[in-house]
Image (cartoon, rainbow, N blue to C red; front, side, top):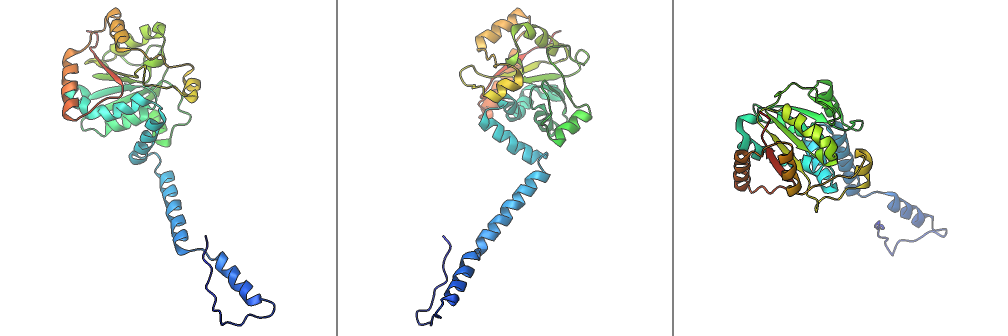
Length: 263
C-alpha cells in the first residue's frame, strides 16, 4: 500500500480543500525508488536472456527446465553422464554420434570435452529450435533424419553411438531395422538411455509430437531383445561405467545399456 505524506495538524486548510487534495494526488502518483530499481533489474535479465538464449549457459537453464517438465528425460541424463562415460570408454569417446530429440544440446556438451568430436541425429522436426541448433544443422554436424530408415553414414563411421529418448517410440518392427543400423555405424559400441516404465509419464504434447505413446520396456525385455538381434552386452564397459558412477556418486534416472558393435 502506498504511504501517504504526513500532514501537520496546525496547518490551516483552505475552505475548498484544494491544498490537501493536491498533496494527496502527488503522494499517490509518486513511485517508491525500490520499485523503479526492481523493474530495471527484471528488464535487464529479460534482455540478457533474449540475446544469449542459444549460449551454453542459457541452454543449461533450458535443460534444467526441460527435466522438471519431464521432456527428454534421458537426453538430459546423457549430459549428466558424459564425465562418467569418459571414464568408462576413454579413447572411444573421441568420435561420438548422439541420436535423439534435443540432440543439439548433447552435441554442444560433448564438443566442450577435450579431444572429442561429436555429431547428432535429430529424429524429429526442429522448427522450434534456436539459432545455435540451426547453425549446427547448417554445418552438417547435426542432421534431421528418420531413424526408421538407413542412416546416411558409412559402416563404423563413429567410435561410439549414444541413443536417448528415441527407441522408446519405435515398435519392434522398426526396432529391428534401427538398432542394427546404429550398431553398423559404430566401431566401439552403443550406449542406450531409455526410460523406466514406472517412472515416465507422457504428456499430451509429447504424444502429439512423436505420433504416439512411448513404449517403455523393462530391462528384462531389452536384454531378451538384444539376444534375439545378436547384440551382445559389453561387460567390460558396464563394469567400468559402474565403477566410475560409484566414485562420482552418480545415480542415473534412466536405464542404461552398453552394447558391443557388430564385428
